[in-house]
Image (cartoon, protein in one colour):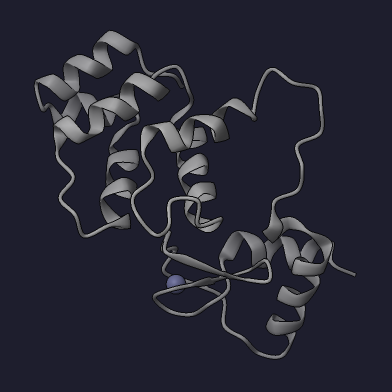
Amino acid sequence: MMADKNELIQAIAKQDPDALQRLGWTKIANTLKRISARTFGWTDLEPYAQMGHHRDPDEIEEAIRQVVTTNASNGYRPTAAQLAPHLATRTGSNLPTPLRPDQQPAALQRAKQLITDGHPICQCRSVNLRSNRGVLACSECNGIEQGQADDALEQAE
Ligand SMILES: [Zn+2]
């Protein structure tokens, strides 16, 4: 689902949580809020809406996750400008997308080994992740990130 730009900008201008929810943007606002202790208000959300209103909110969530997991924003909340290139790479090209560090076979192999050795898998689904040679660990519970754990168990030999 894509949000209508005017509706989305209006919802933010009016600070209308119901409209934001209906447009699928509440989770984006919540994810951005959680990343940093710095205050994140309605007006802070507007640049993201301007940049990403034509995108599926799930894609924006994924872009946030990519920026955070690759540490491209140095642990800070990613700006709309930092998210934009991650969205741009996802459509309009037939070229295969390069594998992210956490999707490299070697990283999946390491993740699988850790899980086999009894390392926990993250249950809290935090977006605060650390990457160690491509293995993503939750900063809160130290578990291996769920998506990567699933991939590791499915794909690694
Ligand atoms: Zn966790």
